[in-house]
Image 1: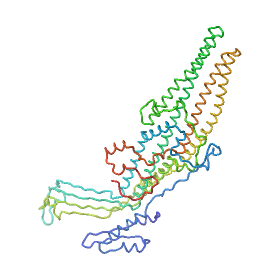
Image 2 (image 1 turned 135 degrees about the vertical axis):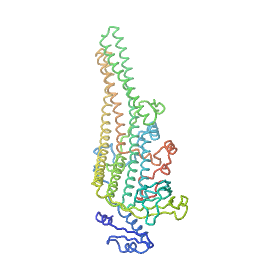
Image 3 (image 1 turned 90 degrees about the vertical axis):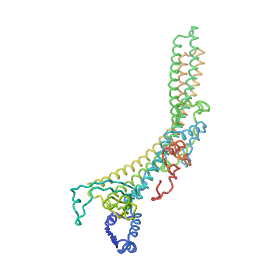
Image 4 (image 1 turned 120 degrees about the horizontal axis):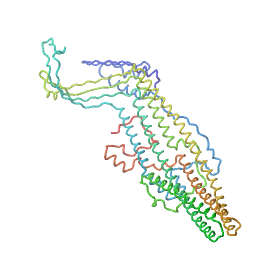
Length: 569
């Protein structure tokens, strides 16, 4: 690499060419270059200096690259989780490829399999990966000659009779004011990547591709988590509905008892109305639970790429059977988040892409060296010439040579563009650090929810048993006449509330465990060995557009990519 002082020294060069019987090319090279390198460049006689200079420029192109080289930014993470002292939390490393199988629920396994193969948001993320690969192809193509065109034209020309060129020449020849001209030519223009502008653009496109892959993985992590959460919600709502309907049946029996005793003159009408109140309150909760169950099934259908459906064929097994979590969960250590969480990797790659854009912007501050050339055939109807003369050897025309363009006096536009890119890079670094912190928070929050909901469920289970016993005692005392019917109704309401709360708590345990695995970045590895684009999408795109080799599976994101490579046609 060269420093900024060296770069500006190298930018000062003088090229002078002459076209005659003897062609000469002089190239000034800084005195600090190796003498052996100088001897191969400085040959003032003949044509050999031209290829030598080209070789020298290509060698320099491989060395010079302005702009910063990206390094992963530091991110502060704790050595251990706050809940690592709990026996239910293991800090040992674990494989989260198919974390949902810890629930041992075949219906859940089938649902996630369908969601992975059919979810439309995931398919869109896969197409964005393909888009990023095409953008990389554009960046690679820009490294090679930017203009290679074949052009042809047939023109009718009329010059003004009053123009200076229309004056009679010294030989007395009167110019021809109207004529036809035809030409065919091949034109080439190649801006040499002297300062690494195009190589930095390839670096940026490479990092953007890796960010798109990480975004796909992040979408997959979210998808598996949402599918599992929706399934657990469905099972929890089924359990709560079963509890509500069972209690409504019990309360209906209590109402009949109260009516019988009232008609027999044993109790007052107040017992009947109190029984009706408790019954109707319980019945009123059922429509709300049914609506939430329908909404959860609809959400799960959309996640699987299906229109809203009852999902009876998928929701096999016992109705209301909430997936049971394992007694212990392996979470590793916080530092694992940096390599496992796809959104953290995406933030890192986006910062790397933006870092390379600084180099692209800085290259505009320096002179751009180009090689241009044109070769073709030209003929006209001036004088004795004819358009058909273009097929003769005398109609050949050619031009070639170097060109330099340096954007000076740009009134700060280029410098401020560099500042813009640098500011965006700093934003990307801060976003990366913030993403790491949020990932850490999400794991801690889910762990706390998982552990505390277990404790709540234990208390609620004890409370439910106590409520059952309380209701049994209330019925016994009511039949014996030692208590009134209000005590029975209160015990029934207490049992309903306890059972409903316990069912919700059991669902919360499983949902929080899903949140733990989602926060740990589990689930995305199931796409390894599979393409990012499904066969149906691939078929539609290939039928519409020539995608060449880009439609094939992408190389692993961990593979080393050379900065220079052949273009994708």
